[in-house]
Length: 67
Image 1 (cartoon, rainbow, N blue to C red):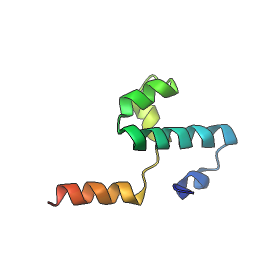
Image 2 (cartoon, one colour):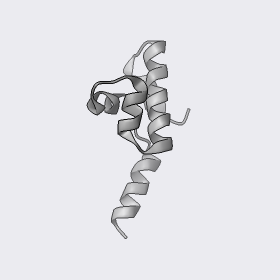
Image 3 (cartoon, rainbow, N blue to C red):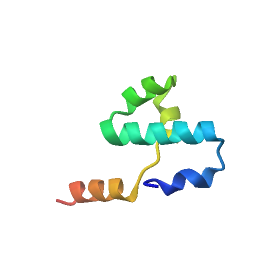
Image 4 (cartoon, rainbow, N blue to C red):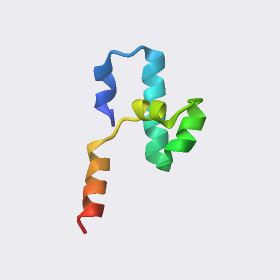
């Protein structure tokens, strides 16, 4: 699984799928507001809970800011 941290939260299958959707959608678009709307959340802060971050994403950020 690309985001193994999904399994550590003890979530129901429904919420695992929402977490996966939020994570994949955010990785694909980089647009937290759009993903928030797609998930039906009133606040992007709620969406941020569902969106896991991979180590590769953090590496990209670190590389970008250290150039």
